[in-house]
Image (tube, rainbow, N blue to C red; front, side, top):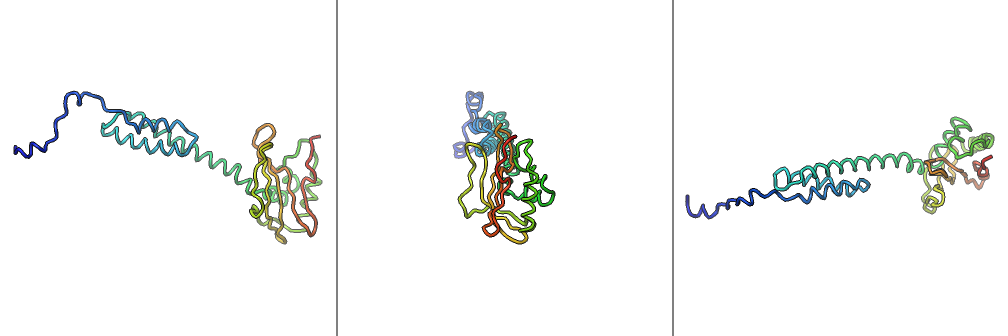
Length: 223
């Protein structure tokens, strides 16, 4: 073998280097730690990325900790799936109904009658408001016709939930067949017992020309 070739050969590893265990993959450990934080989207994504890097390092036997990398990667995927599911539930169950405001209740009443609308309000058990609901719906039909669309009125102050009792007051623009008017509604987010409500407490249609309409006329009290 030529002398110059010998000079370029890599040195043989010593017995100590061959027998010493590979170092622990830092990425694998970090992936597991971050994967345990299931409630944060950023940590779950980081756990997936670091877990993949750790798997690649341990596959080539450059480092140990393959089991940690697999666990971190799996936890990251589980965390991401849970966060996506919670986000979808929050949107369909809370955010979308708040943005729709009084529209579902009004459509239910105009199509199905007073009882259908009343069922979407927080009316104390035993309180009779069907007559008021029927008069409210009849006034809407005679003045404006059926509801066409409802949109959050962003020209007014930004709506904010009430921290003392979780409820959401906001202004809306209601477009009916024969008129477009302003309205304001209050949605109860949670009940006094802490359960999810998402029902209207009241709605007021603002009509300077023909007079405002409100349901219930006054917030009903438990009998």
